[in-house]
Length: 136
Ligand code: THU
Image (tube, rainbow, N blue to C red; front, side, top):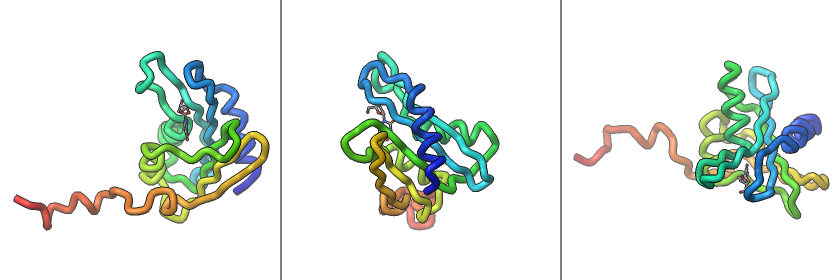
């Protein structure tokens, strides 16, 4: 994981809109195409309508025309590196192979790196919709 990707995630973290949790999160994706895409959490007074930093970075990547995640960094001010929520794990897995590294970081410099496969074992994928074995 390059330091610069963590730094990019930290810079966008400062822009997060998190007045309800007061927990700002930043995410930075380096795409296979070679670009960096940023996202931060954006909360809403209707709490479930808020979006995570990872989802924002994925949306920025897709909107740019890039299609695949090469690596991703997520950062928050916390006592330990903050892992992506369950929904974000599935969102990341949509655009990343299992060996892609997700680096979780704290603003004080602690990091934890795990692969997408480690974060989401047994994930749902298109193969599970194979109709040949479907019950009638
Ligand atoms: N959050 C993220 O943006 N990413 C994570 O990986 C964990 C949680 C946000 C969602 C919400 O705005 C706040 O952090 C508290 O859960």
